[in-house]
Length: 308
Length: 324
Image (tube, rainbow over all chains, first blue to last red; front, top):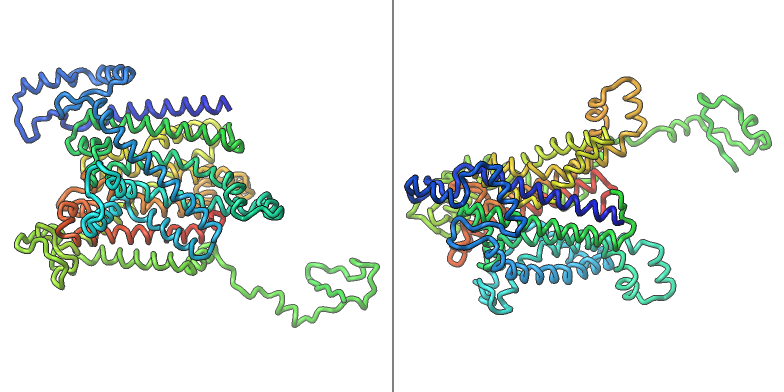
């Protein structure tokens, strides 16, 4: 058990290191630096060199790499190249709480809606509740989240004028972004829950419980759910990753000042230090989440092979 | 009454020899004419593919999906040829026209025909989806096959590399690679192929690991087949079902990734249209001209539906063990 956890942590660190290294060298291999004169304004060569000196862009690449790692170890992700006096850390400090709040609500909604949907689908297999929840699941898996979000925005905010279109001031503002963010995860959770529930309901101990005369609701929610929910735990890692990448489009569509939007504007502005810093941040976040989920899973389900 | 059918050619022994205790009258001599009828194999032997096809054909949703995809593919290839409009032909005097007989899906703010642009987008999206899936299949088969077949230290190292790569969120460095390579179809393909083969490789590896100890692999080895021949002539063809199923699901995910990237503005560049860029372009005019968004959005959704249905159908048909 301890050996397994140590192994996973080492693998997690290696992954993070590879991600940082690849990201760093890719960013520096991109032709045309952040101050390249080919852009809209002409900058005198001397000025350009001064700027590049200031950001250490004229040092040999290995030196820049080591400096970056050193700063990273101190928790400093660097400054934005395009926005004056804004560091990547500040962007994260501003944006992350906003994104995390929307994301947490979306995770809760996804679990609270997805799990019962899957259970109903499994227990009423082949009847109309099964059909309805599987239709919802298929739509959620097939329709890309940005298409869904834009259509919802049009339908509820523009056409019916029921909900606000952008910003995050009142609780109504949360409805559309959270719905857009959690729809695909709901579909995955419902599907996963359905198949694992069907599997569990075939087990002997369920038959025993029924034979004892335990109420069907209790059989489902007490005896079956405990085992059927284990696969959902493994999905929590990918779920966090899905919500993060989902936030890129959702925050863009609904103009939410979160970290995903900074990432997207960083891309379109070619603000390399922001993209680099946020990629490292996202990567570390997802890797840590996956690690926690893996360990959690090993603790919950002792059947998991530890020597994998 | 006990009746035993005798196969005279194979078993020449008389009933008394086999069952010495039983009196002769308990046996019934088999009617020769009847025997021919019973022993004959009525149904022709069914090959794996024919069997899979008959199962696939019964899946109504999968067949609808297949038909939609075929129609879509034909329309995407030949449609733009028969239209008098082109994907980049601007007509500023006819901008933002609603759908009409002239322009089936209306026009965008530059007066470009959205129907032709959507068909053109289908070309790009389907091309990217299928080419990316094919490349992934090749890489995944080679990587997973070698890892599973040679096992031991080779397998250890190759799978640790996979473990590290799988931990990195793919969309993040697809974005990085796109920024590095610039916006074009080729760079999207390269970016998509960097990591998505991992799933295929894992499936292939687990298949090869279980199959390599089968008798036919041993037999092939005994007659002196080389490792590569055993791997690619015997083991891979025997695991082709699960491989195809995995690859089928790569097509919609590649189409989604392309649309996602184009939507964020780092995919296909204007004036070339893809479904993602079409949806993205329509956002500013969403409030005034919603139809510009509607048709490309519907096209992506229907195609994703079709591909997912086909994937589910293929999974049930080719790999019944995976059925849920």
